[in-house]
Image 1 (cartoon, one colour):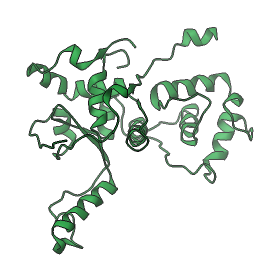
Image 2 (cartoon, each protein chain N blue to C red; image 1 turned 90 degrees about the horizontal axis):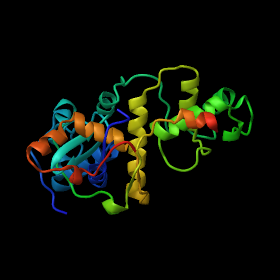
Image 3 (cartoon, chains in turn yellow, purple; image 1 turned 120 degrees about the horizontal axis):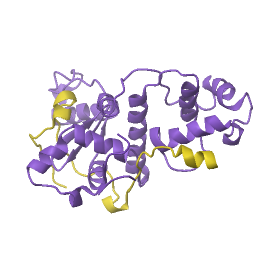
Image 4 (cartoon, chains in turn orange, green; image 1 turned 45 degrees about the vertical axis):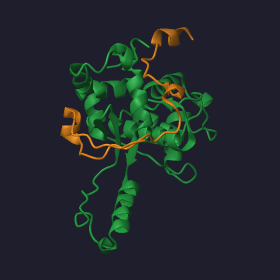
Amino acid sequence: MATSSSSRATSMQLDYGEMYQIKGRTVKMGEDELTIQVENPVDFISLTHH
Amino acid sequence: MMNGPTYENFVKYLWVRAEIYDKYAAKLEEDEKVLIDPSLEGKTRAEMGLKEFTRTEIRSNIMGIHVTIIEEVIGKACRKDVDGAFQWNLNKKTSSWNAIVRETLFNNNVRGKYKDMQKEQKVLQMLLQECFLPKGGGVDQLSLEHKVFLHFFIRFEKVNLPRYIFHHMFWALKESQDKEKKIVPYGRLLSEIFHQGVILEALRLSNLISDEHLGTVVGK
């Protein structure tokens, strides 16, 4: 994977981060194999029933 | 924050390119410098032309835009101060926390199992596992760190939530990198960080993205 150093930055990064070289992939798995966990509000009504 | 969209494709993009920058990575930087120029052996980081190591970071990018995740970024996204009680890397055999959580969570029951907990504590445990420190697996699998977190909750002690989330994210990333674990936690939080960091706006202005590219999911 090619590397590059980009000059673009976000305000989030300008506030908190420093410039660094963008590197390649760090995880062997493909993106399609990943499962995203989304933070769920607890369903208290359902909990009450159980 | 909980009900906003999740940009699944971008979360995945970030995750597979995320790099942990910690003391170990900083030492590798120094070793690399010395390898190139042996006269730098024993010099300070500043003398090597490196910035001082001050904090652990998760570094990645979204289509070339740098994203640096630190405790303060998480705190800003979930509107919490980086302040409060925090316990991590506890030794489950020797830690003095074992006796404390046994009293708080298990009514001094030596077994200390999930089924020994009271109803209210089980609800808090579910909240912890669904939102704050999601790790997959059953709710009955409690690490000592989880138990201590619950102890703080139950005793109304202020918890350093951004620090807990950062350390948990760090752990989950290591699991993906070293053990090929496929679970990516904090999809919604990471999406909020993209939003607050104006990353999405920058890409939209460049006509680089659409909802299809983002993999936007709402109300999951």
